[in-house]
Image 1 (tube, rainbow, N blue to C red):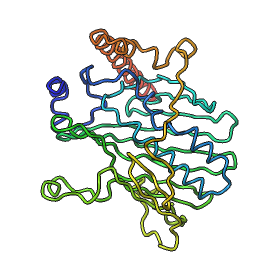
Image 2 (image 1 turned 180 degrees about the horizontal axis):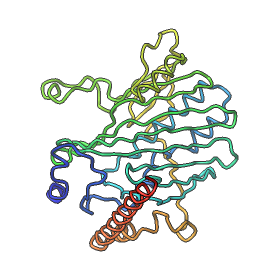
Image 3 (image 1 turned 90 degrees about the vertical axis):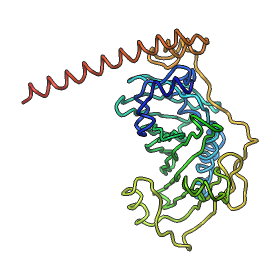
Image 4 (image 1 turned 120 degrees about the vertical axis):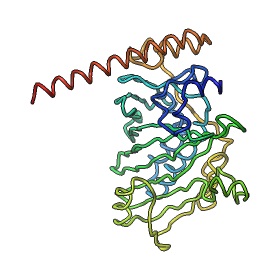
Length: 341
């Protein structure tokens, strides 16, 4: 598989180029679309989002949303790559608490997926979109999921947050390991509350790591919950989730620590641990979904059946059709532009 990957990707690997538009061997794929993978992080939604609806304490609500976001990270660490969604592709599912979700691919270049998750009694709605990209540098693939995550509650408050970058190490040699890098930023502007989580805070650079042992495991997280000041909000909007600057010690409300793999502690109280069983999502009968649903794709269907040759054949047909449609769209836009001028 490694040699097939090298042949398929070539200079994209060497130069660290974008991989989402690169044709990869079918053996590297899992039998589902990225739209389905979006729901991996929702594994504990019925627990934490319902509790967040029930509390009137904005600080406790923020702690629960932090717990929801962190608890789902370990559920995303599959090594196989999901299929790129087609423009207009959809995916529908339900949660065990009766909430319903709808996800759609709203852009092909750049690839953007959008979703709406509604609580059955209207107590919250979770919306957002993600522009996803992946690049390979040496032995590591970095996946970036840029876009807003918004959880709006019936009382009018909204908590916004982002996800960190994912790193898949050991693509060609050594053990295959998934890690996360960067920061998660949470804001509740109505109640002027914020939170920041730093992943792998003691990370060493490549050269230093050859000679020095890291002080803490790479899955370590540390963070704080604090009172927001207006300058914090302005800085976050300018810096695109690069973190808060100059947090006054007097504004700190709670401390966050743990690892995204095993345990989350907020003020030494355990909010999540790896032994907790995720609820997952409930798939709908394909016959009841839209014709554009991911479950109806032939390439995914054949891969589920273990027929790699058929899956590869239909994957190529789908990609050719999509490229042809993109070409027609571009030509049409060019023609319309000329006619207007």
